[in-house]
Image (cartoon, rainbow, N blue to C red; front, top):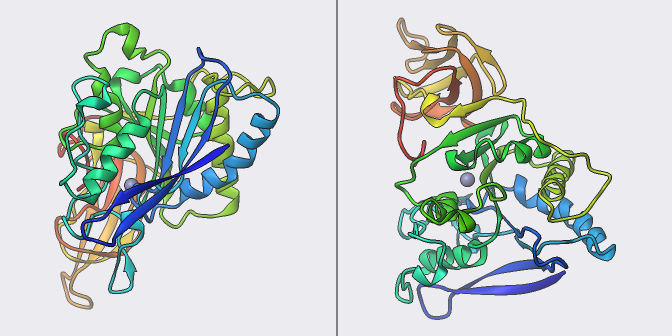
Length: 351
Ligand SMILES: [Zn+2]
């Protein structure tokens, strides 16, 4: 394993950011290559500790000469967000200087050619970081962006062009659910990793061996050694299943038996009132149309001071908020419905 340090110039003299890049060489030129990054939203740590648990498995494979394709790993993808504290609380989702989400405004290239990246020499540190992450990842057959939700199941976002080809990946990772999407107007990292291939010739696109996904490793508090170990095993099985690592002890994965839900089926359930949330449901619950999902306590102790929220359709509770305070119009949860949502959103689900 080789470690290098990437340096991203800051927005003022004397400020710079660093991120480590860990690389394993592959011995087989024809084998698929893999890129993994974690904590693009800097405070989302389940993927960081999963990578930490994965490294000894990769080191063993390297020592035994079983790494076929090159592997690039960026365990802390966002040193800018990692350093952002606002009134004592960590803020890793938006750049405090620009209000831009760290997982939006990536360049969506017309073809998979990093030379097409915009000139950002004067463009701000987060744009320099985004360009660099695209340079590091573009061209890899497997690109995994490890995130987490507030509270949630382990699920994957996958572009429709890669489904069902990626059913083996979802099965190997031991994921609970898959959400399929087709439009990216916001420039997510995943979009920047897969959209350049949409109009590429078949011998470049290679959707049969390409794997690109945003991995949502449950909730923000799901950072512990046991989950890290099982997620690392899932990542390792994916790398073996896709031929990046050789390991005959790992069985072949092909079919995924969990729910596969189009993005437009997801009901985000905007809260009708501001207040305290009393949830009736948690991630993993099945609900029926009309079931109560939550009660919002907006005028405590007063008649009419509670407002109930009911499921608009049957489905699976994918996520819910970690904090129980909410403003009117903010989303209560993700209900992966059995049918198209009346509130279907195009592009990304959240800001
Ligand atoms: Zn995230």
